[in-house]
Image 1: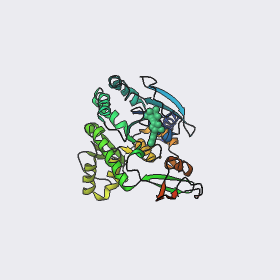
Image 2: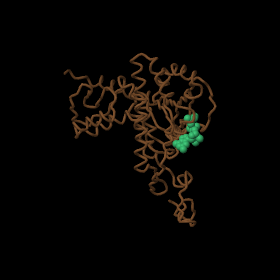
Image 3: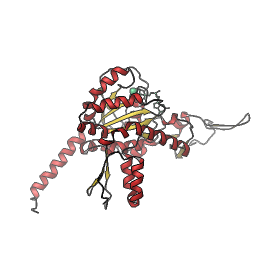
Image 4: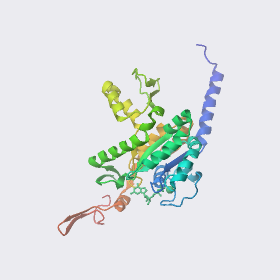
Length: 334
Ligand SMILES: Nc1nc2c(ncn2[C@@H]2O[C@H](COP(=O)(O)OP(=O)(O)O)[C@@H](O)[C@H]2O)c(=O)[nH]1
Ligand SMILES: [Mg+2]
């Protein structure tokens, strides 16, 4: 192979570096779709450190309009609130067809579905409208850009959540039984929102090295493993069964096709959402999001005083109170 002269190589390196810098300095853009009240603004606030108004139900405009906001880390975020779903059925479905271009221009698109929603028919219809009007190539780009999240997980019953304290703060996790319920509900949303678009879905992850599974739907190189199709739980388990020592790679491929249960209030699963979002970013967008990711592990931390305000825990023995989490006499980190 002829070698590239040093001067030229340096120029190529500078080019790549400059491109990276240009991309990194653009504003990250995030779009969020979902019903009014699904918790879109709350979720963006905890994920990106923005200060969007909560509980604002005025349908400000029928057209999606970007708002530029400062985030917590000195960056600017262009945030597209697409309130389209839920205010007037006929208009929404009509507007969904206008969204495709706007969504494709964003780095990240989050679709928020309330964990407690009784019916998903209407949202599934909006998704169908959005995707069906696009040509197949655009449809594939769109559907692979979406990260579905199941919001307000803290509102599902039964409610036992575990708060693990570590110094002045801690994090919430659902109890085992609740976790099963959340996952079951999330899989139902997955069936509704992802499964029907299997022909257009792909999922990819990094290749930790030595991956060599020969399969029609799998492609891989030194860096990446890609699967063409919907990587459902059953598909994942079948691969894990056949190639047990590659189970971690299949689990990561699977993660891209899961609906993430989350709670802005409890800061639950925010890291998982960020990972899901980052997995879908291209080169330029990854550069833009670099500076947002520094704090990814701290996203789930809830200060103890905040935790105590989120709900109380009381134990009564007959008419005698034996435990009250709000009792000021308790140690300050409890
Ligand atoms: N229990 C609970 N309530 C939430 C959560 N996120 C938002 N909410 C509440 O749901 C309502 C609507 O939230 P908002 O973020 O404005 O929803 P949006 O209309 O989709 O932007 C507000 O009263 C929020 O306090 C959550 O994770 N858990
Ligand atoms: Mg809002």
